[in-house]
Image (cartoon, rainbow, N blue to C red; front, top):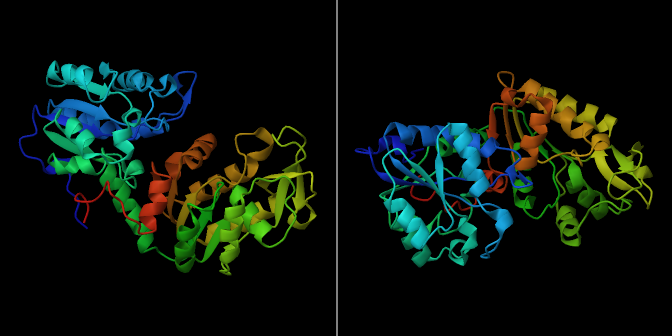
Amino acid sequence: MKIKSIRQVKKLAGKRVMLRADFNVPMERGRVADDYKIVAGLPTIRFLLRYNCKIIIITHLGRPEGRIEKKYSLAPVARHLGKLLDKKVNFADDCVGLKSGTAVGKMKPGEILMLENLRFSKGEGKNDKKFARQLAGLADVYVNDAFANSHRRHASMSAIKKYLPSYAGLLLPEEVENLNKIFHPRPPLVAVIGGAKIGTKISFLKKISRKSFKVLIGGALANNFFASRGMEIGQSLVDKESIKLAGRLKQKNILLPIDVVVSDKKDGGGPAEAKNIFKVNKNEKILDIGPKTIRLYSLFLKKAQTIIWNGPMGMFEKEHFKHGTLAIARVIASRSRGRAFGVAGGGETIEALKMTGMENYVDWISTGGGATLAFLNGEPMPGLKGLVK
């Protein structure tokens, strides 16, 4: 495997570098709530600063779908990045146009400028060549360090590479190299898959089940499997299309919870009760895996030599329903770093790992959710085209 890295660029000093980062981070009351993705991108920024580059950061936040929405402005992200670097990060409140062009023109070597949310422009999502050319006109070199968005055929990921010399940042090769190990796992491989919709995960589930000793299902994802088998799931979260898709997966090594934690309140505000999966009532909602399932899943994880985890086991943000997710997180973390090679990915997965305080024990925590699954499933990755062979 060959990766075209920014480390290979000759005469980088003083260049205008357009850095495509993925700083699509959770926000609360106009502030960054979790900066894991931003911190993961710091090595590339510091590398470019050593060469006194003019760093123009482009990224997105949320899904404004071509509309300007104040709640998705990147100004708070720019301020937060400045605090992490202990260095001023300038901000332009457009990504192409007079303001961004003027701000870039005033830049001095070693300065950092963040442009406004790329997704405020319809051209981004349409992979528009004109929009890509406008972005490219601001820089001398393009660097992709946004692995988590590299499965998107967007202008800042794909079309822009036609107009600038293009390279991978420092984070992107680490993502590719670590995830690549899952293609040739040390057996037995155990996959833990949770979250909600199965639509984005069904092809991955098919593929990973062929490589895996066991695939352990949790979260709302499991509800779709239960419903496809005609089991009572009460008021639990499902969608009709996902039920159909789940019904097609018949692999014997795909395991479902044997007990669950339920509540008779839709928001999980009522008392929690652990139940056998066949004893769920019509007025109840499944919100976590139960203690017997935790023990069963832990037995398989303790035998694993390779582990991949994507998606929580339940509504872990609620006190009564976090135990399944956190218990599995602790087992995966304690098994990783030597005994097994452990990989985790996805925003909620990372959040859960952080709640255990054991995230540093996992061999690789991918910044990607959908991108990680797409990569492991062998799907097209427009952001990697021309950078990774």
